[in-house]
Image (cartoon, rainbow, N blue to C red; front, side, top):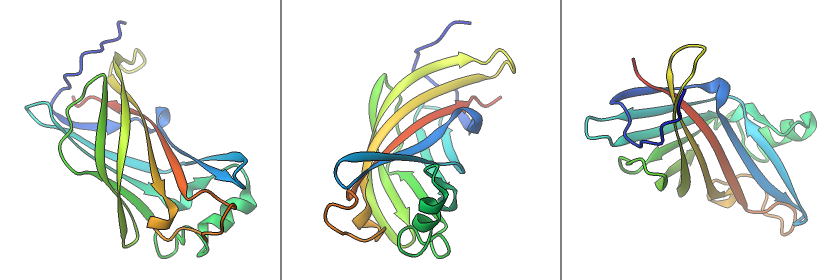
Length: 178
């Protein structure tokens, strides 16, 4: 098995390998420490056209919010923060087709409920590798971006309690179309 760093991807719909992908986040608490968490339910849309450009999107189930602290997680899911009863998902859509490169930026829009805000994801291309257990070829990406809670009405804006900026951290593996 040899890792390919070629950035040309096969045309078609690439499928998320959810067992080897993650959607994480980091937010500062009291300005002194970072709280890390993840969303455990999400899916992607990644369709490469014949020219090699990819249409990219994602949907994250907000009720899958997980920081490892059940009491805090339940509080963040309620109307004080995410309000998952009224706003069950967060979506992302790239604003234009993307060309893969060793390092690139994907610009797009994040929506929670009726609120939408822009995001720029700094992406590191991991390459393509055959997964010997299945024979499928996987492509890998790491991405980091930042959103503001206030853009979506998520949580109280109490100075010093929680940072308004939330860092989003993605590790994504996609399976090549057959």
